Length: 302
Length: 302
Image (cartoon, rainbow over all chains, first blue to last red):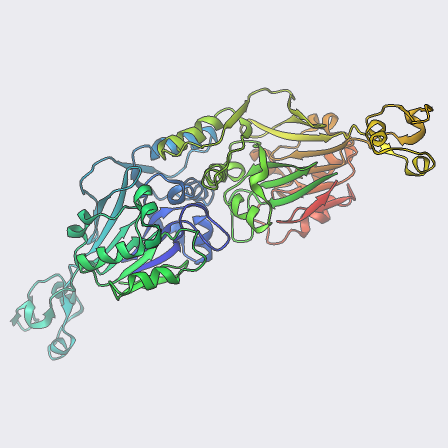
């Protein structure tokens, strides 16, 4: 299972109750931070997330509303005595920005700080560990930008408890069964794995796509995703502005979700020009029904 | 008159209700921002300050809790369509940090952005306009750090309303009198300025001193200031820690205030290790009575 927590979902300028982009994705005990707008560390505290456990931070692009909170979080980790390494994935230049600030403050981190700078215009796998994969989703924005596709494929087979209860199994048999091995009972009887297990769960996929112009080129990569977060900075009445600033409208996001056949769509990155968010929902729903609006601290289970 | 608004007064890491250093000083319609920790722009909105009017920002040093909010504020000014120039005064390196981020975001400001980088170890006047002067106060910290001394000397003489009411004065006479000129009535009678005015108000002085080790060298410069904000990161029980990290205790701050004979002392930059702030007050008061604790959104009139 994946659990997504929205920490901020507004565009451009942070306001009292409108925080800029950041999300926390929890998979199998790993905490992945996606984007890190100004004030993200405070949002993490408010959400009562044990954020020292974050080891991997993915930054989509170098516009301020997606990463101005990163240097503060890195500094706070140092002040809290962190020793665990921290891995940062983001566009080329991010390392120079962070290191320059640490150097001028004479505040090098005591923990290992690793950067993987991204420059490729095609998708690449940047994380592959513990049944979890993260691939970049090349997006079309004013500066070099990537979305991220998280895939979790639990490789362990599921125990068929009914079938198992009829056999005299020892604890170590369950480990073997989950791993797909056939077992031999203490009386010498061999049982095929398939008799006592179900196939492992289907992979879960979460696609994060912010910021981007309306772009059909992402559809094939995110096809069938369980959850798609797609930016909807504007409403259709400002389609021209969306085009010129390389953002999307709610309607366009819904069309992407529909074409990709995803299971659920979450809209975010709302422009502060709109007093309420209802318009985003009413514009997207006729095209794609399984849609929700992001909201600070809202969570989604995948 | 000067009006000081505390926007943040806690050290090191921002928390939900503990913001890092930033202050707004209003003098004669000018809004001066002093330090700019992460989230300062949100604090400015919360305080309902028309922050687009800020034209001068003074940064004491390049530790994150004093300037990580600066790039966000600069970006927000751009997004809000600012055209007025912005002047930033801070340690050498600040220009490189800001410009690198603007360059990588392809988001140059549309308004003129001027930097005055500070490197001198002696005090210098960095602002002198409209009867307002700002001088650096060299401080002793782990990195190059300046406090700032704001002096406002209203050069206009005060009208003696009693004396004036007995004369047949025209409106233009009052302007002349405020400027210190003697006047000639329409009947040809000349009246000396001193007969109709009082001398102008004494200069008002505000000294901002954060972060610094206990340092007597600042005393002569801030002598007799109307208000002194002095950091008190620690209590005396952690004097050793204060010394090794080049911070001050509440007692030390009070001793500086006493030696300098300032009129009022405000303590701030509290370490988050202390659950309550009472200790700072009880430690400082026996040495210097006119002491208050800083608090987010608290204001002080000078």
